[in-house]
Length: 398
Ligand SMILES: Cc1ncc(COP(=O)(O)O)c(C=O)c1O
Image (cartoon, rainbow, N blue to C red; front, side, top):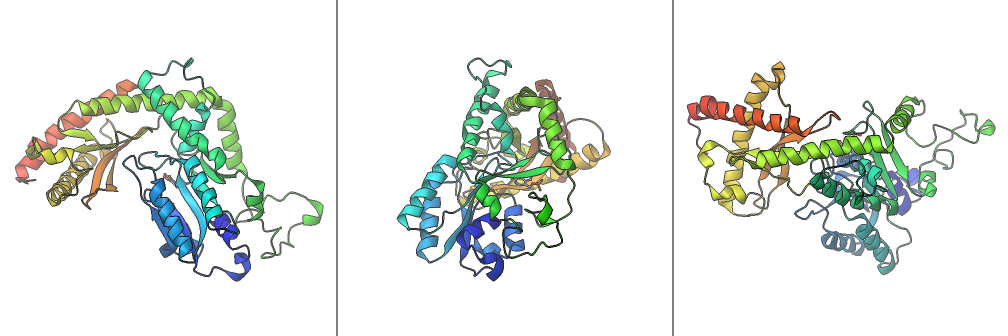
């Protein structure tokens, strides 16, 4: 966001922002994007949220309309922040499509600057490890469905080569480093220059011995003193795991995810609500016993009907009760079995209700498909126990 606003307002480091800069973010963006808009003085009201399609990828056509409107209204675009692996679905936007859209926009509106495109790829970067993998040869012997998902996702993340900047979290998922270990990469060195303290009249860095060093480790960030440990941790992880190490770990969690989803699908009162997701996160919905045979179960993600909205709210209540009970009586007391979390709002459905889900996020490189089978067995038996001893006893009706 900082680089993007500097592109649109080169003097903003001195003059501040004038309230006429808009930044485009995605509907499923991490909350840190809004927090950054606040901290930077850009203002959360100046974020324009791009709508997603059914796969939770940002809709290009609607984003084009948003951008045209922003410019027609006399505002400028201080950045376009794309999905590069969302928190829930690991959704990656059509990066090449957005770059083309941005370039066309520059031509059409005769812009004097090129709006910056950043991809929040702190989760999705790891699929880059498969960029040169021979998917036909499949040397690692990855299972067919997992391989299909990995190839599709790899083709999507490759687009970051066309973006202006992107992020890497080595502490997430299969990154292999302790929290926190993050990087931001600029594809063009000029964008780093836009942040430099030294190359910029805003800050006088006379306390540093610039005359005797052409390189300053404090130049690009807010802080001055900074440890190098994190960079070394990342380097150590890259060298010790290597390309195939990362590939194997990622393939394992994807294979376990494929099994987990298939196991959930065997139960009529459970559903995976992010089947389209190519990553290793699975959102599961459990339905109360009274709802067996209720057609609304299949309509929650697509219908705008009021009755479906009502049903979604009721199932959310059931799911929250179930999670609270399972957490209290098993997970929080370390009684064994799978550990998962509760997401109050996976997405907002077309009926306007927020839909909740149980979030299964496989991160251990030692996870095998058998663990996924066991996980669903635990959920099955816990659900039966909850339905029979808690839910029915309370006489709560859906
Ligand atoms: C897509 C995405 N972006 C950004 C973040 C923030 O990451 P962190 O504060 O761990 O670097 C997260 C965290 O889950 C995320 O999922």
